Amino acid sequence: MTFAKEIHTFHSGKPQPASSGASTFASVDPSTAKPLATIYTTTRSQLDDAVSSAAAAFPGWSGTPAPRRAAILLRAAALLRERNDELALTETLDTGKALSETTTVDVVTGADVLEYYAHLAAGSSPGQHTRLRDDAFVLTTHEPLGVCAGIGAWNYPIQIALWKSAPCLAAGNCMVYKPSEVTPLHANTLAQIYIEAGVPPGVFNVVYGDGPAVGAPLVAHPGIAKVSFTGQVSTGSKVASQAANDMKGITMELGGKSPVVILPDADVDEAADVAMAANFFSTGQVCTNGTRVFVPDTMLSQVEEALVKRCREGIRMGLPRDDKTNFGPVVSAAQQEKVNMYIKHGRDVDRARVLYDGSKDAQSTRPTADGFWVPPVIFSDCTDDMRVATEEIFGPVMCVLPYATKGEYMPELIRRANNTAMGLAAGVVSSDVGRAQDVVRQLDAGITWINTWGESPAEMPVGGWKMSGIGLENGHEGIQAYMRTKSTLVQLGKGACKGFFAKL
Image (tube, rainbow, N blue to C red; front, side, top):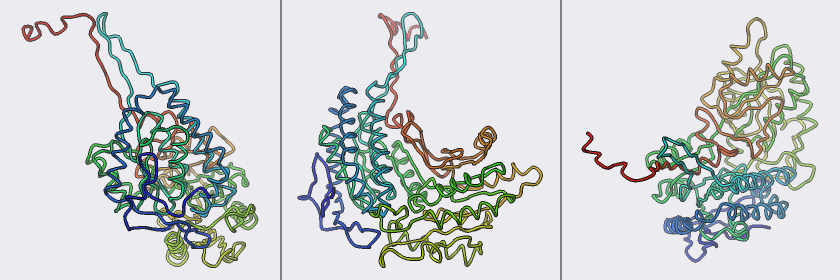
C-alpha cells in the first residue's frame, strides 16, 4: 500500500503528527464500506503552519532556474510512472473505480501533465520587448504568484492533484493542497514523491478536512494568492465569491449537464459507442459526462437497441480489483443515495421511459452486500423540463432526448442542446466532419469533441463556460493562470523627467 493507516497534515517536507488534534475522519472502501485509514483533520494552527511553510519556501523555489525546476519535476513524473500500479491500487481502494481504469488513466494522465509543464517551464517564460522610440522600450515579464491553494475533487484524486500542482510548481509557485475528504489517500504519497524527486520542503503541502472546517479557512487565508477548485457548482460559487472578495486569482472547474448531439447521418454503432463512453466511464462520475443524448427520431429505435446491447454485453460490474471489471461502485453511501433518488424521480415523477435498468438486467447481482453499487440506467423519451435531464446527477444515468428531423430542425436542436445553465462539455457524432464542426461552433461549451468523448491530453486546455467554471487547466493557457505579468518601461539615457513640471 502507498498510504499509512493514520494520515496527518503534511508541511515543511513531512507529516506533522505531533501537532494533530483529536478530530478525525475515515477513508472508506466503496466496494465494501469498510474503513481504509484514519485521517486527522487539519487544525487552524496547522493550516497557518502549512501556509507559512509554503511562504518560506517561495523565494528559493521561484528563484531556482527554470531548467533546474523542470529537472526536479521530470524526476517526480518518472517516480509516478515507476509506481503506477501501486498508486493506481490506492486510487481504486479509495474511489471504487475499476483497477483496469486507474492503472491506465488516473496516474498516467497526471504524470503526462507534470511532464508537459516541466518541459514548458524548461524553456522559461519569455516576455516581450516593445520598442517605443529610439531611446525607450517596454519589457514584459511573467512572474509566479506566491502561495496557491489547490482544492481537489473525489472522482479523480491524484490526477486532479497533479493537474493543479504541475503548472503551479512549474511556474515557480508553492501550493497548499486540500484533497476531498472522501478520497484523501493519495495526497501525502504525492507530497513524499515530490520530496524524493528534489522538490524543497514547503513547496507542496497537504491539509485535510471538509469544506467548512478546512476548505473555507484555506480560501480565506491572507497568505493565499490564488485558488484552484474542482467540484460542484454550488460549492464553487461560494469559493469564487470568497476569493474574489479578497482579490485572489481563481480557476474554477465545476459541473455540467453536457449534450451529446447525434446527427442524422451518424453511424449507429459509432453513436452508441460515443454515448456509452460519455455516460458510463468511471461509473458515470465524470464532470464532463454527456448525460443528455440527443437522438434523431429517424434513428431512435436503432440507437436504443445498440445502447441496450452494449449495457448488457459491455458493462461488467464487479469488484474493482478484478481484471474483468470495468464498472465499480459509486464513491460513497451519500452518492449512492443521491443517484438512487434521481433514478426514482426519473421513473416515478418525470415519468421517463426506462429503456434499461441494470438492477433488473445484466447487473442485477451485487458483487458485495455492503458496497455502494448503482447499476446503469438509461431513460428515453426524455424532455427538456425533466429533472433528470436538467440537473447534474453524477452517476450512471443516461437521458435520451429524441428530436424531430423534419424541416429546419437544426436551430431548435442547437437551442435545446444549449438550454442549460452549465457549459462544461459537448460533443457531436456525424459522418460529415465539416457539418459536425459547424454544430460544435454553435454549442455553448468550453470542452468539445467530435466522434469521440472524454480524452483530455495535457496539450488540450480545458475549462467550462457559463456556470461550469472560470479559467482553464492544461495546455499553454493552464500555466498562465499561475503567473502574473509585470510591465517595465525603460528609458535610455538621462533627463526624461527633467523640467517636467516646468513644461506644464
